[in-house]
Image (cartoon, rainbow, N blue to C red; front, top):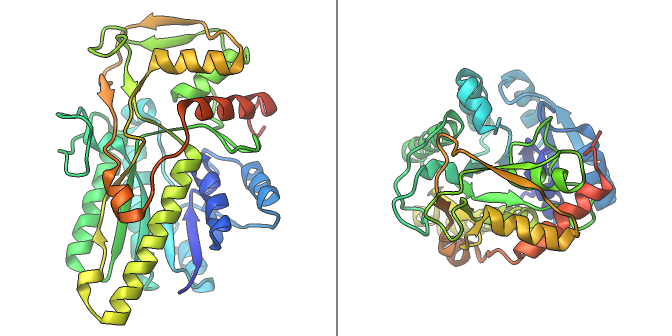
Length: 351
């Protein structure tokens, strides 16, 4: 079986951690990233951690001609597709930018993949495709709806992948629906490095703890939850990275069976899978754990709810365990310890 993987958006937060996990699992990687929300330094650090250089191509997924050159030069088994814009607030202000980059860019990528007969894809989807869930925990059959253009762009890509699988059963498409990735690599060398003010909770907490920001705004303390603050399923980014390796292993097994038995029963088609811990943690619980781990106070103040925010969201991760043999192993304490180590060692991120 071929073992070369194209990782689009591989210089980003989840992409860099997944590159390390792929290397450790014996895969050869080529990273393709336009560096719009990432850093060349992140790839340098990954290279240092794995002890060898990574082939890196600076490019945009909307650039069909460059993608064709990349596919012509390599014999890829699969693509792991992370490349995309990801800030909810920005998506509300700039919806066309998000649809152009996340949806049109993915269409361009899929067209080039089809041209070069690379029909295996692991797609970076999101729990935002579930919107405000009707029941908890959320499983893969839960109703999908979105409350912002970012989520809509992920859901639109999922619909495209579904239609593609129906049109041609040689496609093997696994969208992994992430819940809330946090944490950093155990080395402290790579982690989440947001541009300007962080959009996500954990880097905001850690920047308050290290003194870069004065205080944390908690949006809403009147939700029907354990302490009135929002509840989310936080998952360690290295557990998430292992989920991508497990998805690739699953694809390899299915494709081998299909080739051996010549039976389309073993084709994957469109197979969405949640990656989460199955446990909810409130904002105040996360702050409390981070303060204990770091020994630093995290001042906060309550603010009104944000439009589009929901009270609780956590996964059923049974399907990932059953099909992929994967489950999250690291705790909230691990997530806080590793985030704090990264923040202390790289207070200005990769800059």
